[in-house]
Image (tube, rainbow over all chains, first blue to last red):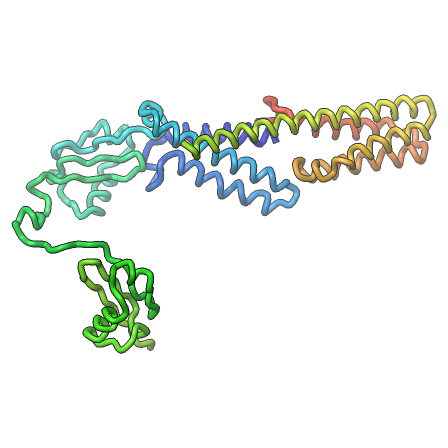
Length: 226
Length: 125
């Protein structure tokens, strides 16, 4: 039990350190400590299941220890900026005012090809359009275009964009979600009217229907099965 | 902060349980060791009946903690220890002069079980 506990602590902090040194690129969407826990827990849980000679506690104790470490590290890093920087690292600027910071690229082991790939994924093909490109601590590259390159907003164009609102599902695969309907302030009569105006006789003919409090409706009828 | 406090409390509880486990393991192994010492002395003096009684006392002690051991020790290690107990018991019943070897094997398994629970460079790495 003591060995399991100490080994888990050693492995947790070793992985945290190694992955921290490896840099942000290894992470994907997760923060560093989340990645370490995710990588360890799946394997730890599988061991006592695969080998009946290993007591279940040998799998459970490390998982509990990892959980405690993760909660404590996350909690402490919220309180301390220094600890946060130490564990999760800091965002890196890869492009500033259209200029690629090659030293930062090398530090983060980001090749020009990978940079271009990331930019293309965000529909940007020309680095000179970019005011800032930030490699976040979770490994994601965020791109901020020069103001002149950003798409014009309705406000900039002086156009009335109307109300937005959050679309909520009211019919999902033929089933009416009454609670969502009530939440939006609508009733069945409103729903029936909407269905009739879209040529549907009943909710059963609807695959997906969403609505906003402002009255914007998205309607997708069910397709006939081949 | 409630979550952090709960996590810290859980970690401290795990550490406390670990220390308690080490104490329990030491006490159990120590008690079995003492019965093995009596077994050795009696068998050495040719008193196999007393030696068997002392061995059975050690076995009773060990079996009294069987569920605990099953939950915390690797099962192959426990099986090896149980086999070593049986080996020594058989040797003593048959008054086999090779009983010291069986006793050494039993002590080895017992010692390994204790050693592998205690944090040391060897057991951790």
